[in-house]
Length: 112
Length: 112
Image 1 (cartoon, rainbow over the protein chains, first blue to last red):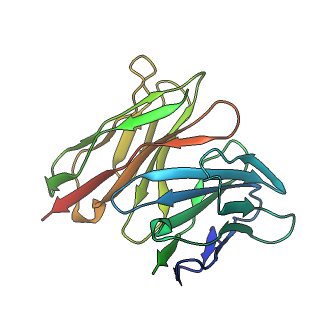
Image 2: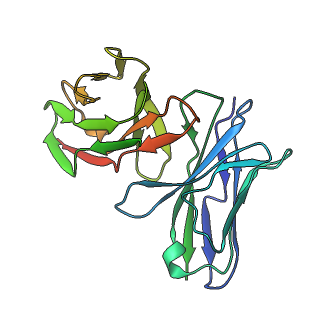
């Protein structure tokens, strides 16, 4: 059973471009979470989704950031018009209901 | 509300020393508690868990006991190795809603 797959591992974008981060949860997992980690800082919750629904987006900035988890295909975290402050590691995690989270290896976004 | 507070780092120990990383929580109801470990450049991996009061989670020589009376879940290991150098995160999952809350992480460095 493959783990949580995130791609790309590294993403470089210039200021003003769009960043699109993908996450394929483990087979059978219907819950997906996105977290952001800045250097020397902890994990910051961004959004929690189930298939086709956003359950909790309280950690997501109101502008430029969006997330989806469609019926078919991976979950996508989209950042529009990136700025230098968006540079971070973005982690996706998945779980079945009422079970521990399984994390991917993250996407490291660098905005130049 | 729900939250996790863990010991500030960084922690530096000599090989074979005893390790304690403190973690306390605030939660409504009866949460499940977790310790995750993050090695450099990787995502978080579940280290151990406990789902009810007085449960002891253990794995790879690490232990933590769910103490409801002190709302704590301290991580311990009797003899650390260089390979244990990593960042350790305490987390809880709420009784309802499938939401997870993480501490800020404690960086551990073990020197030979």
